[in-house]
Image (cartoon, rainbow, N blue to C red; front, side, top):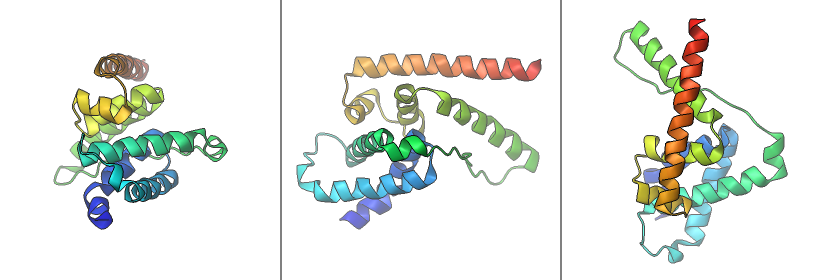
Length: 166
């Protein structure tokens, strides 16, 4: 059972942990903790949401606990995201990778509350209700945060473009 969960959702859990912590090693630790928590509390899963939503909620909670710890406050490493595209010309691949990396760099500049709704919506393609379930908040709050995050991200990207033109 646990092995199946890890195979099916392991990468999603790790990616979400990384998007919240921006640290590969910490994301590894969080992912392990998430699946240990899931294994310990599998009896408490009521089926009110999907298993993926349940695991992402656990991921968020474990990540918050790690962020609050003294260890996390001392360690802060940011690594590039490599989307790993294949089958294009080297120039086209480079341009798309740079554009994608720039968007993700700006996403990581957002406050955690904004970053998590953008990641859940854009990367995991969760519905507003599913995001509300993961974050344990009303759908209206999710909508508001998503609107604010998009607005801030657009502003950051525009500033970046304007800076490069000058």
